Image (cartoon, rainbow, N blue to C red):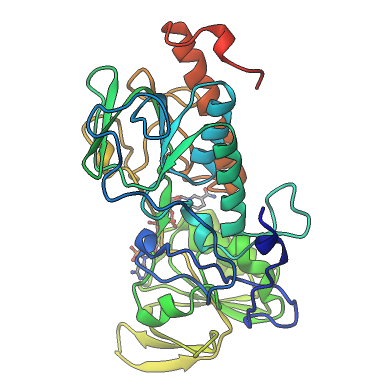
Length: 382
Ligand code: NDP
């Protein structure tokens, strides 16, 4: 952690009575979600810029700072990918992390993280990811902020292409995560982190005794609406149809909750407010009638999209679009491992993703040892 980060006090006006900040880092992670960061810059984090074309070229240097070959290549730089990198690097595997052009994963659009163990006072999501990254680099991970465009898992070494450069790996750990879906409104983007959130577990606490709304009709929306009643004085559940997609038990629990009011056939046309959420302009999909609902928070719970496109044709993808895991972290291809939200639609927490990354690195290292790629002495004590 830099001194700058330690002393930074981002200003944030969403929940003044709690004094909790909710943003303020100058990382452009807009490419991840098609949206802008949550607040004005306060704490710059120096992610090393990658050259337009990574040095080394196709099949280039196998060692050194510009190497493109590794025993392990990790795709993704959220908690799963960077934890895998920490473990792989400490085991002497000198991993390359292809971190994505918007590195850091979903925590880069999360404000205060209060449920990650070890931070009793909470930590900003981007700060937490900067710490993960520094720890991975400390042990020799090479982290490159590029998107993998194509893979060839047909033979070993596995091959991966990013920005015109070919990377080769004896083992691959996939930790590409999932992206929350958003409504796509300009006002939603502008007020993200200022009352608009896609994570009730992360941000619900800040809406104590406030009236808020949740959008969606699946299990996530039903679960989040129920969860949010612990804090909010009232939760409006806005669903675009007149029947829920979620499970019967969750629907029943929702309908029986006196703090939840369901609004069927209702869509959000605009989030109102300049610097924080002050209300919603809603439209009834049957009558077309519009109305304003005064709320201080809006939770979008319309699903996640796992980032699996480049693995189609190589790995099994389940009916919800997530990678299918074999055993703990394995895939259908020996030497290709899977960690984090790209396969997990159940827990989706930073700490579970990190645990998954740890497991994948250990499994990869043991597998490489069994293949004779590394010797037992290569590995350090975990
Ligand atoms: P789902 O895809 O199941 O539901 C998404 C909901 O959002 C739907 O009701 C959909 O409406 C609505 N929606 C989608 N796009 C828009 C939009 N642009 N505007 C307004 N509404 C929109 O996603 P979930 O995240 O809820 O669930 C994903 C999976 O995870 C499911 O299989 C679910 O069962 C599971 N899950 C399980 C949990 C558990 O077991 N505890 C908890 C959470 C999730 P419509 O219905 O009209 O399509």
